[in-house]
Image 1 (tube, helix red, strand yellow):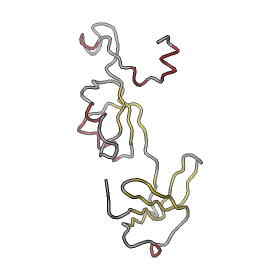
Image 2 (cartoon, one colour):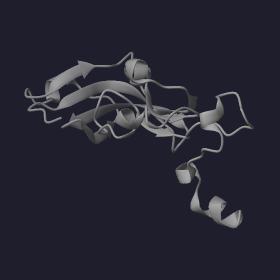
Image 3 (cartoon, one colour):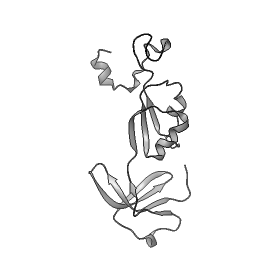
Image 4 (cartoon, rainbow, N blue to C red):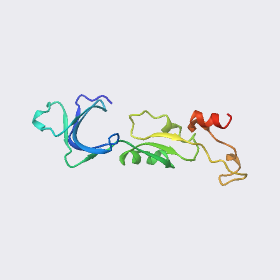
Length: 150
């Protein structure tokens, strides 16, 4: 996303998760990436005219949220990002159906998707005969796989 103008979120209420607090500040966004955060209030007169300025004095800026238990499909994936959720973990479904979402570029209108595959249960199982015994271990950290002797 290459923009000719930078976006400035002027005098926003910013949540700082590292310090566990909030502060008033101005955020400079260039080419879709946060380039600078200026703590404290600024005047609109001091900003360069080539910037797109959004006055955000009564608005809040939060980091992207992560939802660790979703059942996501293509059609409603953009609703997650509209709600501030930038990453999701799909908790059971066909990863082949989610391939498009899982390989989408990071600057698209959908969240980053990580997914477990279909659920393992006994035969015939809740999900039918063809699902029994399928599991993808890419979500497990390496130390978990090693501790189980794998």
